[in-house]
Length: 231
Image (cartoon, rainbow, N blue to C red):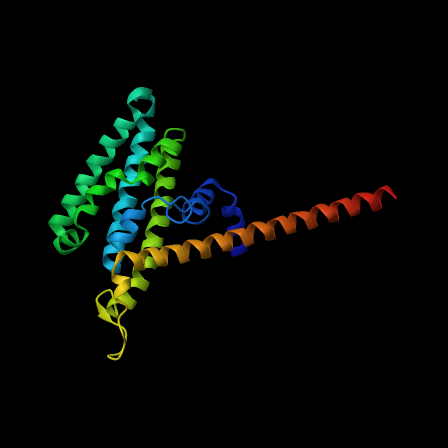
């Protein structure tokens, strides 16, 4: 029963959008978007989660709003319009952090405001939201935002444990643990991002080759069946 439901959902538009945003078109690992904040704020898990959720919120609402008003945006000023929309929601996020989570706001510093320049958000508005209805645009924004957030969390978990010996501020290593200071700095983030990108791309290449092999076998079996029927 569950298997049938899975395969039924697998070939739907929402599944395709989620799969692309999180895995096959991951904005950080495959498109190299949002690298600046991915390296700058991922020395702590809390910061990575906050930045990921902030970007997810902005890309979702800006995408759905762009989709709703796309017919009224002159082609000459579409980029300016995207920037204005994104800026408005970034201000909302920035003020929210300052009001309710001042410590996170101080930790993220100027990187919240720099969400405006995140090519992931403008890219989804231009490449997807202007060509698709609002219901799919919000799904696409959520998927790519989650893909971005997951990468930030993975990197920040490894960096925080190795650099500070903590996870979400709680000590998880013994007293004799030697802290990797480099993981608290940008070079550590670069290294982890490179390793994660390599691992994901290798996995995707393996899946593509495996898929090609299965298709070749299926084609061969079909050809053999046709030949045997002809004989």
